[in-house]
Every structure is written in structure tokens, then in C-alpha cells.
Length: 225
Length: 95
Image (cartoon, rainbow over all chains, first blue to last red; front, side, top):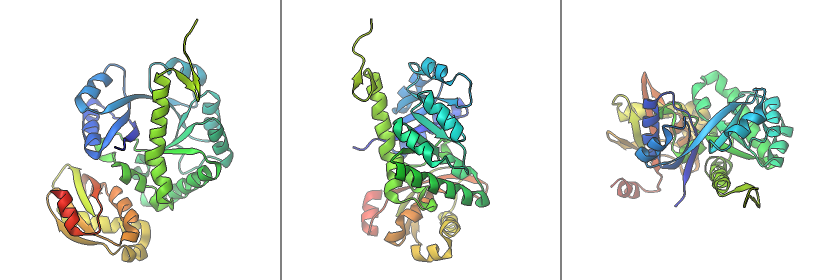
């Protein structure tokens, strides 16, 4: 059975969190990346029946970015850097982040950033919740940027992830509907499906490996002295 | 195409949802896209809609469903729960 994953859900309050998890379960997700504090996540996991990945978003403009990543590495399953431009992407990659949440729409990253993302085996994440929040006139520019991001990623073989970024249950989408939300930008169905279904799963497998002591591809920590 | 109404803060008539869906198709793909998609409302109930469309435009119609989040002042969450070539098969999946 295919496991659907929404890597980015950030509820505003506890009521929204319950509602989001209940709806995510109805929509067919089995794993959710939730921006949540340490105390409540176990309770949430038991209540909803979903596997919850603890996630934290760090602004890429922070001064000691590398220190933050090292500090949060053991506490959270997913640490993402919020990037708004090329400079943020470069800083985040330099600090060792492997998930970059891009919030700079309608600007798109440069094509050279995608080479760096590919070189660092990182993932660039887009929240489709942002697409819902824009008006009709702004959407044209947004879709152009999304099309460019997908084109550059395809050319440089960089990995993209589409997540909902939902703050309430009404902004969640079913996995295949989530993939279809980039279709108006001219993205092919295969590319959309890879970004919404296959890449989040490969990212999840990386996290599982991290739990089993793998720090890089083929490098496992067997003991410390 | 079987569209399920997952969540809604008020009850909304199926015809109004279908009208919003057609508006979204026209917004994203234009009148040409709307005519190519050839969408028709087959039947609807409290929690579902059955819509027929051209199979070559199924992904585009699905994207219009995903963008339907508000009808008037009411929030709504829709999902495409099944796509089939025949209405008979959709009915079987509904049961």
C-alpha cells in the first residue's frame, strides 16, 4: 500500500491541530510533518492514528544558522529552512539543511541554486497553501514562478516536494489533489506526482535511516568513543 | 468523477458547488478549456457529487476541484475520491 505524506502542516492552535489531523486521516495520509512543540506530539499521535514527524522551521536569515541546525537535529525529525531568495538558499545549504521551504513566490530561485540543491542532496519544498491565498491577478505571476521552478528542477535533476503548508483543515488537500494544484502552471502530471508523492516518501526514508544511525548515504555511526 | 465533500461549515447545494467548479475551470483554463473539459453534473447528494468530464481533461478538472475552497462566505473542502470510465463503477465504489 502506498503511504501518502504531507510534510508541512502548521496549525495555529490546538483546536486547529485536532481538526487538521482528523481531516488528514480522512484524506488518506498516513504520515504528517507537524510543526508542534515536544509535549503534545505523542498525545496527538495516539489520538489520530497517524505517524507524526516533529518539524521545526528555521528562518534562513538567522545569524547562527549552523548552530541552530546542530542544536535541533536530535530533538526534531524534520528541520527545514525558510528561504525567500537565492541568498537564503545558499546560506541554508552551507549550514547543512536538507529541506528548504521556499516562501519567495512570485520570485523563483536562480538555476544555479538548483545545481547546489542537487549537489547537497537537498529538497526544495513548495507550500500549495500559498497558491490558495493569492488573488486572481497575483496567481498569474505565481504560476509562472512555479513553472520556472519545476523547469529548472527538471533540468538540474534537483528534487522538489509539494506540501500543503496548511494552517487549518480547509487548506489541506488529498494527495493526488495536492499534485494537481500545480497543473494550471503547465507542470506535467508525472512531475507533479513525483513532487507530491514520491519525493516526500524518499525524504521520509532518509529520516528513518537517520533514526537508525545513518548520517549520510552509506555512512552509519556504529559507536562513539 | 466522484467528488466527496469532506468538510464544510454550512450545507451547500450540489448545484452551487458544481457552478463554482465550472467557474474555476474557466478561470484557470479559459472558455476553451471549459468546452474541452465538457463537464456535466450527473447527480449529487449531501456528501458527494458525480461529475462527468472528458478523460483527456481529467487532471485539469481535478485541479479545479482542488482550488474550490470557498463558495460565497462558506469554507468547503472537496476531494476527488474516485475516477472511473463508467457511472456504474463509480456507484459500486460509493457503496
